[in-house]
Image 1 (cartoon, rainbow, N blue to C red):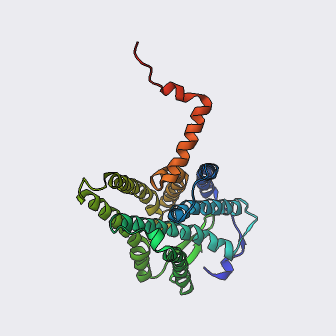
Image 2: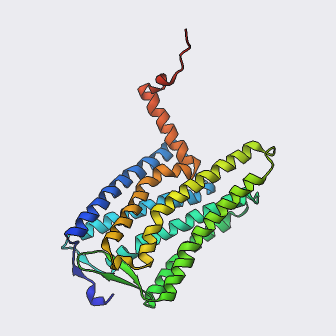
Image 3: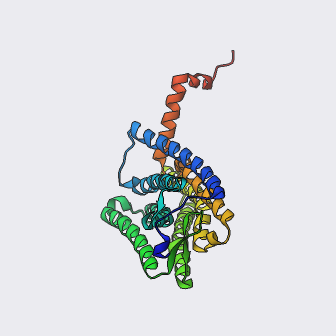
Length: 305
């Protein structure tokens, strides 16, 4: 993107404004849902330890996505606010970067669960420093990858009049690298870890540690449910960005943005499949509500006279 194209006045056209208003409604709903889940986690004194690192990182990153969209909307809704170099790059890169980090948080979580179930190695105890260091390192490597591609002109930021700033890739090799290594590889690793753990649990002797095996079996099934739902709502946006479909069909881009926004809305609820602490928070709140309204009385079983 040329320097003279920066620092100009520009808002969304009528079509983009109406589309982004719909996304804004979803973002407001997402903000409410996330407030509720985090409020519940704190009032119920949920234990925050290293085992909560990746679920915490994943769900908290949604907050950054919501805030980023609110900032983008405020800038674009006011046509007199100048679109600068910084705001355009922020619009194009920030939410994209956070979405990529979410993928790696989930991959790290699934690797840890595989090691615990199949290898009987508790990564949160044996490799505490490695987990923390690798989390920071991977986030930095993703950022460095984006910076290098931008500096060398392999990925450029462009803006169509009346639309948001988006990314376009000029190098086919870089596009393949991004698709295969940055996008597809962590997903394949995650599904591989989960299916291997599932097969392992099917093979072990049914008489050995039945309670533990059942717990692990339930954990893997829930992880597969969450990861599959996440992939359905998350993958389309990443494919559209990497394949430059945004420059070809704005309607497709709008649809995948809505899917991604809906994922952010649903995350506080479907996170019950990600970590039991989220499920416990919702359950305790529901039990408190039922006690306040006396609904538990309706669930009593009355003996037959």
